Length: 229
Image 1 (tube, one colour):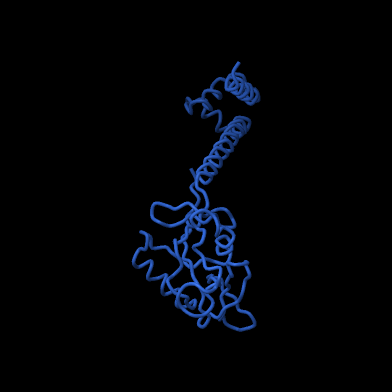
Image 2 (tube, helix red, strand yellow):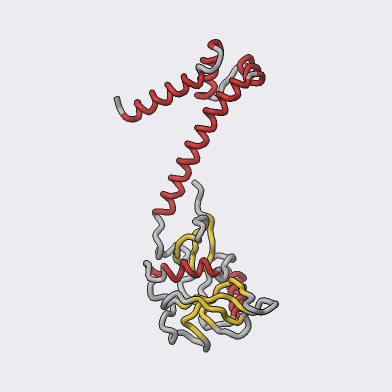
């Protein structure tokens, strides 16, 4: 007996066990209903009035739903697993990893914005990227602190390698090119929000930076939901 036949026999036995909780005259109708979805009106009337019938159907359908969800999870994992951090996409962006909750894929621009910018200046530059549909998209954003941590961690993977400023002395502009802007705000000790968090890519050091004064590097990203099937 093959493994597949063994599984089928096991499922048939389980189905019979569930059906055995029903009156004998309805067991065949129940099995046919589960297998094909077909049911005659007398059986549907029985289900409508029988708690045992409803419980049996609910048991089998919940098990099927759990099985399908498990299969969907495997397929989602398989699709994500075929995509490696550092892979270059057809549009020219680079897959940089998953968000901390694992629900979204992070795609980074292949290079930083051309000069170091204040946060407010970076917001304007990213808006222009979206207006121009850079690489064919209009949903670029300054990464959150959590997403920036992912970029810093994966900076040497695949085609991400050597695209970030870790020396602090390359690129145009003044300020702190070795630090990267995030969109995560921090009040510090102020009553308003003058700061944003930043990450130094050479060692992962995090810092507070003035939104309107500190000039840092910026790597725009896109977030895309992990495929569900």
